[in-house]
Each structure stands twice: as structure tokens, then as C-alpha cells.
Length: 374
Image 1 (cartoon, one colour):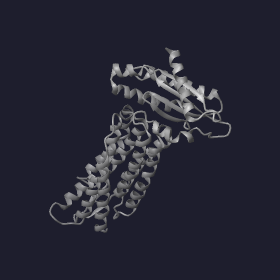
Image 2 (tube, rainbow, N blue to C red):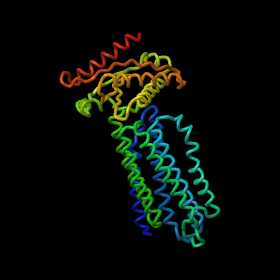
Image 3 (cartoon, rainbow, N blue to C red):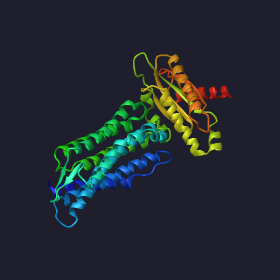
Image 4 (cartoon, helix red, strand yellow):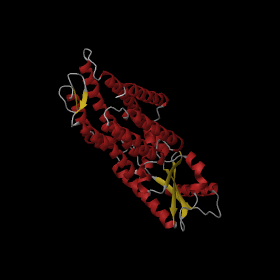
């Protein structure tokens, strides 16, 4: 063990995470939950770097209370390690589904393995479970320590599976950082599992937090925080590319929709409930559309779905699915409002229209549908 290397490595990790902590800004409305989870992971990382460094310093020392201090520090490390992995999984799940109800439903059960590992770390204060401290104050792992690594990897792999399986619910700017940031964590933890004297886990986590921070910054530029869909800035920047044909024999089409009587939801229930309605429409659109469809919050309570279709019939099928999902939502959600959506759609005629004309015509079609419903 090179104590100087351990101190330098963890000091760099603390500096990096502290910088991320200082520059993290709290977001608005429901995104504050994911922001709190992210900041909690930063705080755990800083504490782990500090505690791990102290554990290496105390190892083999003979001053009064050194062995008890080593027990406390290492018990904390084992408990906090699994807690970080659990918080990471909760964070990924919330970024995918934006549902506190889902977290409350599933994560008391998903958290049971983490709770058992944390309890084992507490018991380690009284007798060896995951590690032991000899009378000479020398740290060593027991055979059960492998369970903590396995449980941690299971949480990380579960989060990766969530992203893969439900990738339709998540935008590319968060999906890629989630996948990438697990790479240094897995490599660092495997090295430390095999060679106990190395200290690489938490500097690896710090690197992962940087990757995730970059994803959050991209998300802030192109993702609407309420609906989780692409925003108008994304559409304006990429409209020409988005309207190009994706496959031979297919054409670009778009559905424009808005929420009927949205102002009355804000007036009667308050703007926070109105924000929830925007988020609910985002979920409805994700559930009703295909992976390749591009979902955009166009402005206020207006949304756009960009499609790749062969004919108008396919556009109508998607519109019908959106209507059916909205009807299902009204029957099952228990919200203090009903969602009614007016829709207009059109196939882009590349030879006759530019992007501005196309969007104007879809918008007109939507308002014709709104007047018809009234």
C-alpha cells in the first residue's frame, strides 16, 4: 500500500466532486428530486474519499483507540458503499419514469439487500462479518466481503438494465452518460476487489459524476424539465435534419396537439398542478409512440410528434393511440383534472414546403380540431 498515492488520489477526487457540488444548481418543480439525489451522491462520494483515506492512515497504527477507530471507519465504508449504489439506482429510475409513486411502490423491496448489507456493516463493530481488525490493528477482509461487491454490482447492473429496457422513456442525453459513467466505477471497484491495497473506487466514482454532469448540462439545453421531452430549442436547431426522409419509401409527418382548457386547470388547481398535467402528457406521448418517434414540447401546452411513415393511415394510428392513452389516463390516474387533447397532423411535402410552412399548417390543423371539439 502506498499511503501517499492513496491520499493524493482521494484528494483529487474530493476536489473534483466539491467543484461539482458548488456548481450544481437546484432545478425547478419535480426535477428538484433528481437534483437532490445527485447532490446526495456527490456528498457520499466526498465523505467516502475522506473516510477511506483515514482508514488507510489508521491501519496498523498502535495509538490508543486506533483499533476502534479502524472498526468505525471501515464499517462506515461498507455501509455507505451499498447506500451509494442504491441511491444511484433510485436516481436512474426517477430520471426514467419521473414518478415518486413508482419509487414508493418498488424501492422499499429493492432496498432490502442494501439494508441487509448495511446491517452487516453495523454488526461488524462487534464481530467479523465483512472484515476484521487484528489485535495489531491490521485490516483484512472476510469471505463474506464478496457479498458486498456482488450486491453493489447487481444494483449497478439493474440500473443499466433499466436504461436499456426502458430507453424509450429516456432521452439520449441522459442514457449515454448513465451507460458511460458505470464503466470507470466497475473498473475501479474490480481492481480494488482483486488488489486490496489499491484505492480507486471513489476516484472512479468522481469521474463518473463528471460524465453524468456533462449529460445533465446537455439535457438542460435541449430537454424540457417538466415533460421530459425535447424542447423548442432542439427543434429550431435540428428542424432541417429532422424533416429529411429517414428511409426510402417513408415520409416525415407530424402531429401537433395541445391540452384543451389548460388555463382552467391552472386557474382551478394551481400552476403546480398545471405543471403536473404537462408532465402527464409527456408520459402519455411516450407510452403511445414508437422508439423512433421524436417528441417535442413545442410551446406552453402544445406538443409535437415527428414521425416516419409510409402514408397518412400510419399517422392516424399514432393519433388514435395517443387518444386512447389519454382516455386510459383519465380513467385510472386519480388526478383532479381530465386531459383532453386536440390534434392536427400532416405529411411533409418536401418539394412544396419549407419547415416554417409545414409547422404553420400543422398548427392550423390542430386549431381546426379544437374548434370542432368545442
